[in-house]
Amino acid sequence: MNNKIHLLSWTVIVPLIAWVAYLAHYYVGGHWYSLLLTVFLVGSVLAAVYHSEIIAYRLGEPYGTLLLAFAITVIEVSLIISIMLSSKGLETISLARDTVFAAVMIILTGIIGICIIVGSIRYKQQLFTLQGVGTAMITLIVVVVFLLVLPNYTTSHDNGEYTSLQLVFISVISLALYIAFTMVQTIRHRAFFIAPIPKTGNDELSEETDFLPEKPSRKVMLLSVLFLILCLGIVVLLAKYLSKDVDVLVLKAGAPKSIVGIIIAGIVLLPEGIAAIRAAYNNRLQTSLNLAFGSALASIGLSIPAVALVSVFADFRMTLGISIKSTLLLGLSLFIITISLATGRTNIMQGLVLISIFFLYLFTTLVP
Image (cartoon, rainbow, N blue to C red; front, top):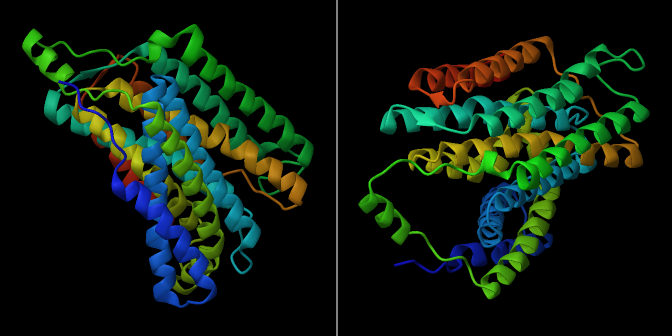
């Protein structure tokens, strides 16, 4: 018998308390209060993704995955822009680049690596649709090169920066590619991105179907829309307020400034990463890959154009070109992903190699 979906109480309570706590910062301060606000920031991000999933489940696939990716991108862009506009002591010229690069590396090597390992431990091998993954891969590779590699080799501006005209043009091209990809995913070749049903016995299949929840009602969906807006709003405000504490923390710790980008990407991608790992555990690797590649494309194909637009109108500089070390790690990650997903089957060794690259990326960021 199908189960009805109800809103979890914490996803309603946390954003409301977060709003109250934010308004109270005019009267209360200190490091401990900032730590409390950080907890509410993470909770609001998790609640926002939950409400996005409710709306997404109501709309159905693959529209639900697109909505979830879009909501996460809004959070990511809000965090980036808020910190870039409000931070003073910490140089934020490369924050957008560091965040997007961190998101791509976390997704390609961390999330996908864990998904392959989890699925391989339980099922030895897992299958997925080659056409959908291949379409996402070629789009991601092109957009990544346009935005993170090519700026190092243009001559109109130094230090891995585009001129305003170049930035607008590349952003438009990247956005157009993302829109084209979503059209392919939702209309022209929708079947390429629908998770195949694993081969199971009739009894197991009927048992699994019995536990599938009903689609949320219209009332539940409208409430999720309301609380999604509240969550996104408080995330922006809390990020702006806490940016000065991030500034002080990074400077006191003597950590590389790129660690801020990893923190932002980690907070934003945590809920979707958990959802992808859960799907792989349930033998839905196609769903895991849809979530992963959709997030990566949205992160770079939507976030960078949005931040670029703000940078042009707000007249602040933005470095996009990554270092040679980062280019090597990125190239290696894309190469391994391409080989690993070229046969339509995965095994545990592919996941272990990807995870090793992820750990190397984290270590070389902290110890450059």
